[in-house]
Length: 114
View 1 (cartoon, helix red, strand yellow):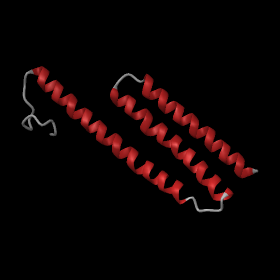
View 2 (view 1 turned 90 degrees about the vertical axis):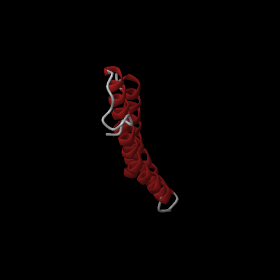
View 3 (view 1 turned 120 degrees about the vertical axis):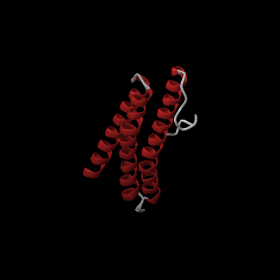
View 4 (view 1 turned 45 degrees about the vertical axis):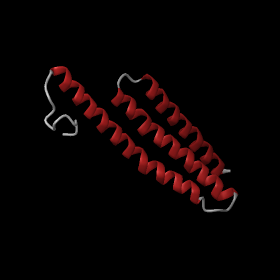
């Protein structure tokens, strides 16, 4: 009974965070703000959903829930890395666009990486 309540709370909380992250993706004004919503809130929400699945599978089927643990680890490792790479690419593009509009050249010979 108590475990079912905990699973239900994790499902509701996870769904709420996923919803907030999705709303942030749709409503926030610029790229960097839109990147923040899904990477923080949605990752936490999906993590809570996977944790609820882990608790349910672990108790109902008697298995360890290795798949759920693998999904959770993959999510928590890849989401911040992906967000970091997207932010770096957006910053390089912004620098490249600013330098082109100013009529100058980039210090790294036009690559936009420096």
